[in-house]
Amino acid sequence: MLSLEAIADPTRRRIVEMLAQGEHTVGEIVAEFQMTAPAISQHLKVLREAGLVQSRVEGQSRIQTLNPAGLDEISIWLERTRQFWSQRLDALEQALRAEDAADQHPTKTNPKKKSTRRPNS
Image (cartoon, rainbow, N blue to C red):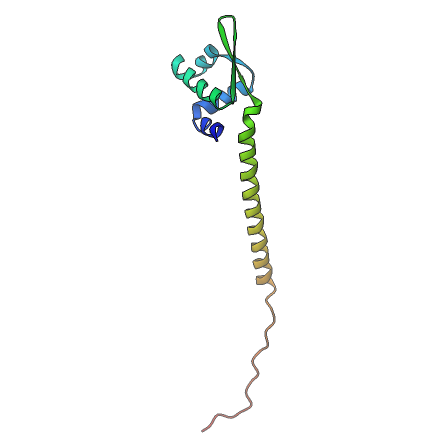
């Protein structure tokens, strides 16, 4: 669940979205946010530790890239959650349709026969 915890923060989600468009230097990421470089570096550290982001050094720059394999944990969790709710909603739909059908076609009951007895006077 480390990757899910990492993207729980809106800033980190935005960083992941940014890196999904392509690799960026730390400076480019800092420029997109109204945060200090150390704050962005801390967010990147959390993302790296979660396996969502990879970093490499090119000259004087640290290039950040999205690690698609790191998204697997999130993808698996989302698929399980989707299946869970899909099954529940399918069951609800079937129950509602059965109830609707029962309301539209009530079962026939035997009508009460009129009594032929005369009331006692």
